[in-house]
Each structure stands twice: as structure tokens, then as C-alpha cells.
Amino acid sequence: MFAIHGLPESIVSDNGTPFASQEFQDFVQRNGIKHIRSSPYQPSTNGLAERAVQTFKEGMKKVTEGSIETRMAKFLFTYRLTPHATTTIAPAEMLMGRRPRSLLDLTYPNINNRVQQKQQRQKQSHDKTAQVRNFNVGDSVYILSHNREAKWITGTLIKRTGPVSFVIELNDGRTVKRHQNQIRHKYDQYSDNKLPDISKIPDVPIPSVSNNQTDVEAVCDSNADSSDTNDNSKSVMKPSVAAPRPTRTRKPPNRYGDFVYN
Image 1 (tube, one colour):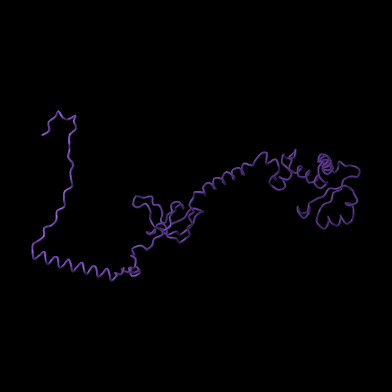
Image 2 (cartoon, one colour):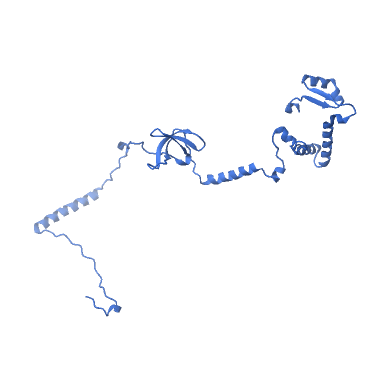
């Protein structure tokens, strides 16, 4: 008891042999405790202790299940959670500054626990469709602009002000604060005002032509040259004219037979 709660200022006891011994007197003197003994054959002098003994005996009679240790633990647990008649506060709550949890809490659920459960369910539903965005200080990002010049402008992330809030430095030196939903990573392939290096583009090989195909093309070219020579010597060929598309014969229906068409 002393190891948990510390040394008391005073102890009230009866005149029993354990409390009247010299060893007990030496103990209270060494630890600075004032020992008060009640009057002989007058239990009312130590009324608090006598009343506690009476309450314990009555409570143990009502607890009938289990061993003596289990019955004692159940009684002390119930007694320490019961509000006192004078203070209207449970002894355990006065000692520890909080109310220990018991089976009664299942009958009357805690509002704080209910709110936490609802918030956890909302978070799980949100995380199913939410897109995770991780930003670090020094990242080049696009931020949502609120002016009419451009919808997205570039900047550098310089500070984290919260779990989802950041401070961004723009290219013109201004600093703005944005939520992570208003920030996008900048995945530019080339930096600003810099063109790609053409020398790094790989050469595309030209497909090779087979010997047979070359011979055929040479024969075709020679035949064309000979035919052109012969035609030029005889007459000039006229360009061919594409034939017109055929047309169908249109016949008026019989119901229009009374009318004359020009």
C-alpha cells in the first residue's frame, strides 16, 4: 500500500498487539507518521474503520460464486465504482481522476467512442476512392491558380504547415498556401525553355532492297523508256478522260400521268 500511494500523515488504529508493539512504533517514527490509538472498549472512537469492516462483511455475504479471492475482488470492484453518499463521486474516480470502465458502460455506450467509430467508418469509405498524394519539401509542383491568367502555375514546395497543407514558392518569388488537393506533381520531360538534344535520338535503319526487286524495277524502267521513244516518233498521246458514271432512266409514277412535263 505504501509503495503505491505513499506514506500517510497519520494512522488511526485500535490497541491490538500488532499496533502496540515496539517494532510498529519504530516504523512510524522512522517514516514521520503520526500514530493515533482509539480508546479501549470504545469502537466508536475509530468509527470509519469499524463501518468499513461492517460494509465488507455485508458485501461478502451477497457474493456467493467463486473462491474467496474472486468474491473479494468482485466486491471491491463494485464498491469502488459506487458513488459515495456524501461526495456523490465513486472512490476510484476521486483517487485516479477518471471513472474505470465496467459492464454498465455497455448498457450506456460512451458518446466519444461512438463518434470515433463513425469517424473511422467515414475514413474507410473515403480511402476506397481517394487518390494518395505524397509531397516533399523541394518538389517542383503545379498549383491551382485563382486568377484568370492561367489555371495551373508552377512553383516549388518549401514548407509543410500541416498534414495536408503546404507553402509553395512561385517562379516570381511569391509564396502561397495550398491544400494537397490543389497541388499536382510536375512530371516535365524537359526543363523550361530547353529543347531536347537531337543527337540523342536513335537512328532508324533504312530497309534493304533485294536483288530480284532491283532487276524488275530496272526492266520496267527500260521498257518505259523504249515505249516513250516509239510514241514520240509516231504521235503525241492524248490524256485519257475518265468515263462518266452511268445514269438510270427516270420514269414518273402512273399517278402523275395527267400532268404534262416539259
